[in-house]
Image 1 (cartoon, each protein chain N blue to C red):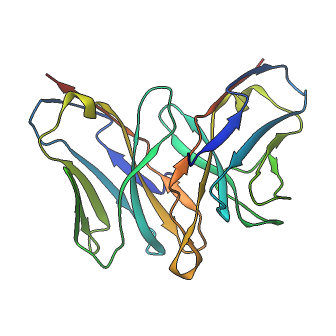
Image 2: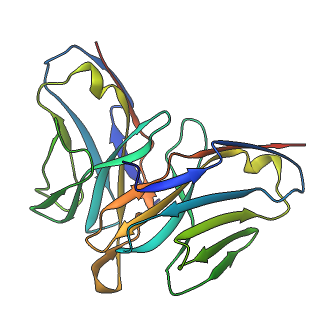
Length: 116
Length: 111
């Protein structure tokens, strides 16, 4: 089954304690991205990756890091989490249409992060 | 600043009605406009998408209308059903593969 898998689904942590949210896809997609979803704000793109070792900032990258060492994995790293990073996070992946355009077709189930 | 403005925030219709959700944008560099459906506890699911050289696209009961000159696009759900009750998001892609989403519309279809 084609899927994007995020772990963990739920996480409560304390301010300043480094954490990693993993994301893995089994569709051999080149494009992967991370979003945060907040009430009233919709989804906002944090980072995206067009290929292994290629990452770019989205709309709200501050306080986050990503890496893309393998095609299937795209972990999101919060090196020093703060309460304003409490949110619902989604990983997404897609293949490219013509001219290397992503279609953002598949989303994971989400990770609910609470930073206290 | 919200790059894609979505309205209404919430919508209630009777079964069989045609809910319409509207989105507007300013950035002419956007070249792809998808819509997503999200159920509670789930990730968004791609529903239908359109490119700006097309004025309308239909897939089953879902239709996107696109007005390039007005920089507006909308989702119509024909013969709506209680199972369509969900949150709907419009989005826009910039040429560099950066995506911007609307703030979402919570749709309730009453039996």
